[in-house]
Image (spheres, rainbow, N blue to C red):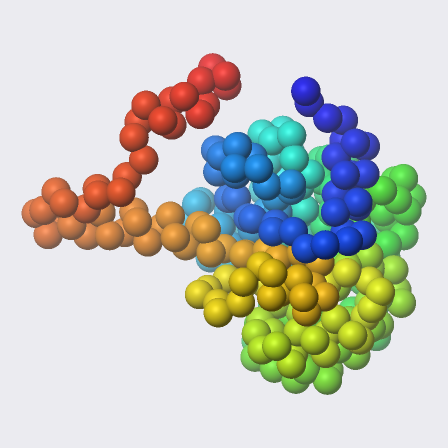
Amino acid sequence: MSRTIAEKRAAFRALHTSGCFVLPNPWDAGSARYLQTLGFKAVATTSSGLAWSTGHADNTLPRAAILAHLREIVEATDLPVNADFENGFGRDPAGVAESVKLAVETGVAGLSIEDSTGDPAAPLFPIDVAVQRLSAARRAIDETGGDTLLIGRAENFFAGKPDLDDAIARLKAYAEAGADCLYAPGIQTREQIEAVVAAVAPKPVNLLIGSTSSFTLQEVAALGVRRISVGGALARAAWGGFMHAAQALADGRFDGFEGAAPGSQLNDLFKDRA
C-alpha cells in the first residue's frame, strides 16, 4: 500500500532513533524501484549520479533539474527519500530558504545542505556564513511543517581541506543551528568516525562508504553511526559495466555483456508501470 508523504517522513525520522541502516543512492526511477524490492528502508538521491546520467559533471545542474529529479524519485518509490540538495541553491540565506521550501514541496523526507561554495579558490563557506545558510534551511523546513529532516554537511574532506578539527567544529555548529543529522563525507578511519559521532552526540551521524571498505555494517553500527550512504558509487558501478561493454564493442568484441541483467527480469520488475 502506498504511504502518504507524512507517513514516509515519520518512518524516516524513526529510522534515525536507534540502530544503523543503509541508505543506498539511486540515480533514476528504475534504480530507485529496484532498491525498494531489496528491502531497503529508505533511499537518497545522488547529485553526481544524476548529473552523469544527463551528460554533465557533478554540481553543474540547475535547481529546476534537481527539483524535477526529486519529484521523479519520490513518485517512483514508496520509500522515504533523502535529497542530496548540494549547497542549497541560494546565493544568500534567503535564497537557500526559498530553494529548501521548493525541495520540501517535492515530498522528500530529508534533505542535506553542504557548506561548499563551488569556488576552487575558497571551497568552503566561512563557518558563520555556513551556519546562516543552514539556519535559513531550518526555518524554511519549520515553516512548511517541520517534518522533513535536515542534514548538515561539512565538506572539508571533499573540498581539499581535510581538517578534522574544523569539520567537527562545523558539524557542532550545524547541530546547534538545527540540523537533525550530521555528515562529514570523506572521513574513513575508525578514529575519525568515533570523533565525529562523539562530537555531535546524541544527534545521528551519516557515514559515506563510496568505495571498498574493510568495515562491515555491524562494525559501523558499533561505532555509533546511524546511517550509511554510498553517494555515486552505485551509479559508478553501473557506468563501469556499461563502459566495459562499450569498450569491447569499440574493439570489435561482443564479450562485454557478461553479467548483464536479463531483459525478462527487468520487464517483470517494471511491468506494473505500464
